[in-house]
Length: 128
Image (cartoon, rainbow, N blue to C red; front, side, top):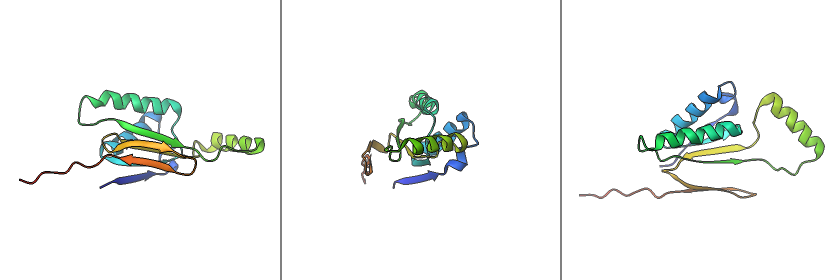
């Protein structure tokens, strides 16, 4: 069974970077795919990947796949300025970030009109 967990931006906006990353990793370690409203800061993505790599050898955790999809970037100069001001005031709410355990998510591809999320086939248990 595939489980998706949506995290609205307001749920993480007041958290420190460390707490954001811990919250996301705890969800992903429970074999859930996170749909995060908005995006992480580049430093947070880097730290998330670093922490994941540190934990790979300690447990059955295989790592994460991450992809951020942004809305249409064909904007006028006025729209870009308006969106920059809004982002500065409200945070990185634009777009969607998908983070999933590498044991489930095989690959995430971006397409202009859709997101392609490829999962690994579940191993079938043998009956004795």
